[in-house]
Image (tube, rainbow, N blue to C red; front, side, top):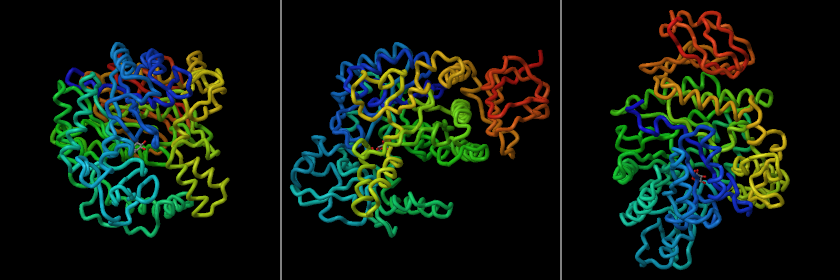
Amino acid sequence: MADLKWWQTAVFYQIYPRSFADGNGDGIGDFKGIIEKLDYLFDLGIDGLWLSPHFPSPNWDCGYDISDYMNVAPEYGTLDDFKTFLREAHARKIKVILDFVINHTSDQHPWFLESKSSRDNPKADWYVWMDTPPNNWQSCFDGEAWTYVPERGQYYYHYFMKQQPDLNWHNPDVKKAMWDAVRFWLDLGVDGYRLDAIGTIFEDANLTPHEVPLDLAGLRDASDKAKTPEEKQQVEKYFHDMFKNQWSQPGMHELMKELRGVIDEYDGDRLLVAEDENIAYQGNGEDELHLVFNFPLMRTERITPSHIRRNQEERLAELDALPVKGWPCNTLGNHDTSRIHTRYGDRQHDAELARLHAALVLTLKGTPFLYNGEEIGMTDLIITDPTKLRDTMATWYYDRLVNELKVDPQEAALRAGTMSRDKNRTPMQWSNNPNAGFSHPNVETWLPVNPNFRNGINVRDQQNNPSSLLNYYKRLLQVRRGSSALITGEYIPLNTSTKDYFAFLRKASDQTVLVILNFSNKKLDLDFSHTKEIKGHELQILFSSAERLKTAKHPRGLAVSPFEVFIAEVAAKQ
Ligand code: GLC
């Protein structure tokens, strides 16, 4: 493993700071809370943290609308608290990457306040201004993409909420200011960045209008109503067509190269991972981003063996084709998506499926990213009281449903709550004390706590239960840590036509490991005695969700239980 970088061998864990741990009892997570939980994270066995934005923000988009790139939001603590957090994480050998929102700032950022004040101020050209709305472009959060400012008598462009004006990245002063902010945190010792929404940085230079016969509210409404595969496909196509001129436009490669140059000023060991799936942004394999996420793995209603195989075949071939081979990065959940447990469950075997999905992310080739709470099986909580929603994308939709599309308010509340990202951002469930131990008792938390913390979905109960999901994650992380094949090995799919189970090898120079994920409720009798890499060997069990004894097995007559996760080393016969 000596020739791999730390971020290739690491397992990352995403912390959503508002919901992780409330150290000062105001109902909002903070650095004091996070610091208190570092031992928990160390014990869990992760190696890196991705911290969702911790910067000052008016919170129109829960921190993804930044009003100062070089400071800490007061509700999370001070810069000193941040430094303590970083030091304490590093003391536990946990790396820290920050979330960097570069497409837009908050409309309260001093840059924007200055830019909007007149047409000839020094920052007049820092955002994207037009005399009249040049087209029908939509904001993906709140409808119209162009918003009027009386001081300038002009409109500015925003891909997200109108409180999130897009920066003009063609302006060299913007770049300089942003690179300064990048260096500020690198100088403090952070280990890299997760770059937010990079696909939205540039727009089509011809400002070509979209041709979808709906506006955003109409399209979301159509999306809610789409039931057949054809209807769903049509909606997907409309989403693509509506935004295609506002996404993935030329200029990105040059910009990512420039940013990589800034990052590489720092000992060549800091990481850039982007919220994008486009492998082309890994450049020649060493001159743009280090990683992009394998989002196509997530983009399915059910995780099936054939979906995984197809995904791996495509992604790995593309990564291998880069002049310097690229490295994969897998995840199944984050703060923008329905929680794994809910999204990929079948309401009958959710617990078993959650274990299979965890094993998948932790055994595929690449760097895994976990999302806080998935290790205890947290589920979505649909908030049906619109006054309790904090995701403004959902409150906007509720408003449009009721006032424009004349939908009954109760139905509108359910639909807005279902599409809202609040459902997967509820406070972390630490114990079965009031407020799930996230905050002090009797405090109103910023989002409601999911009441299922009382039914064992909390850290403390699971710590005390050897067969809990939490202890399952821990064991799996330990097995991964001890296996060069699982960390570095090549991926070799086996028995590729089977629908019930997904079997593959991870093969390193010093170890080969067989992984079998049985996605069916059937017991399987498998025979790997003719598989080239396994023939003449025995299978030394490293891990099983069926809690088998760690013995050796013959590769013929291998019985695998329903929904079992089976991991074994292909070892010389004793
Ligand atoms: C990214 C973030 C999301 C945010 C958006 C705008 O997609 O993950 O939470 O709302 O960018 O910054």
